[in-house]
Length: 46
Image 1 (cartoon, rainbow, N blue to C red):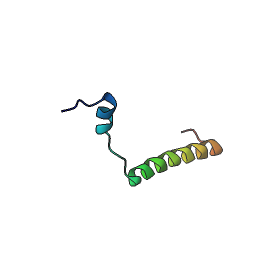
Image 2 (cartoon, rainbow, N blue to C red):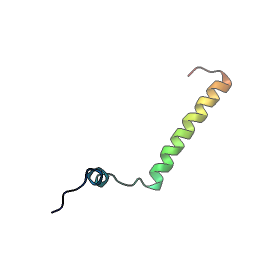
Image 3 (cartoon, helix red, strand yellow):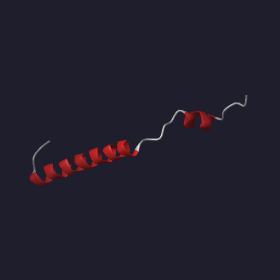
């Protein structure tokens, strides 16, 4: 049996994130940004 390279071993444990998961991560970041901007615009402390 051939020994795995270090890079191959690290890559083997990673899984590809589904589109839905990436979409939710992006939406959460966008919502956080918009809430921060609204708070600054309204001069309301968080």
